[in-house]
Length: 395
Length: 57
Figure 1 (cartoon, each protein chain N blue to C red):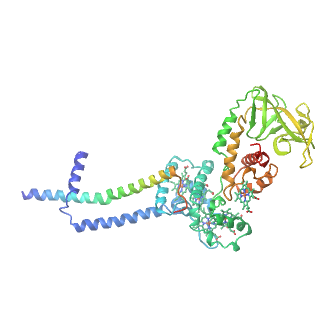
Figure 2: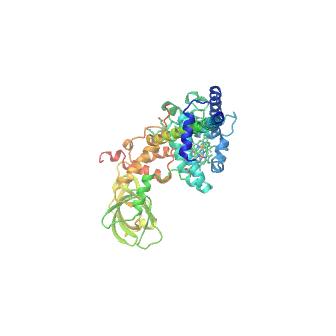
Figure 3: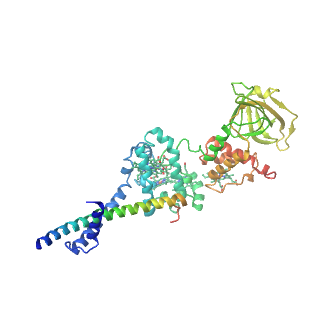
């Protein structure tokens, strides 16, 4: 019997009134299977919303589950606990169904084992955590607020620190995840690294295409040497240092760095501009004192501090990697990072709200609240200093 | 003649029962699950285009 004739005989049967089954049996049969189906459907939905189901995948069990067990959401004085779906699965029907379908990605990943070892999981964790953060930031930490509510918080019962931060946050209705990351599982180690814009810039800088006679900027710390074939670094350029390339030799370039230093001590720290505490290089003591490498001109006095600053020209060698020709590309990355990290609790202050020399204290008091790693923090601080009130006139 | 009509009504009963069970147990549940699934995927797709759901319901 061909498929076509099966279908047409099926159609013939169902398009006519039933002749041998009574209307009562058909209605009852439909009604009962409907009930059974609805029950089964909901049971399946419920079952896939249990902790047992989530941890039936070892990828979920061996990593995040064991970590959860050491937190207050697993076991506490009152016995009110949060399970995986409480925090991860939307409660509203449409979004819940969408999340379940999204889990087809997880099934796929489970079949192909993208995170089936601890190493693979740790390597992917930053990515997965970012998905969750993005979701909770977008819905203003809705899942947390199914249990927690600012209006029900007793500020007097809270620690002074919690109150100091959370009372203003409650007034602004800030989501919990902005400040409470890593409350249920370990935080990813490599969380702040890998801003895509920075990665792109680094790729460009690492191509190492420098030409003699042109100006370039360091986008990170770069070791420097006292000759074309020196093996021991004699110091390093820091982020934002502006150099002019004088000569090249294999993978090295000789450069001149025109900058300033304070006329006291060994003068190991080189600054960008007169009177501004923005570092561009740090040298070893011997190098800093070597007149053939660091040429010093007559000092001038900074009225504000009474310190003498001397213009210097540092002539050294470095590898070709780590420079870009357009400093603005670096500042764009910095600005993006500044906005992303410093606007969660309050509007981020304009860079020219403070002077170059007062930014470090302001910034260092705050940076602990963010996820920035040292390199990123350094970049953002340098950006702020270079766009501070001291520069706003000239920009 | 009467033999034929009995055998035809037997065949009809068989076909009707098979069709009834197929529709209520397989076809309609299947379509429902498929429909919910397609709906879920559509919402997910829209969320990827228009961003994830926001807090205000």
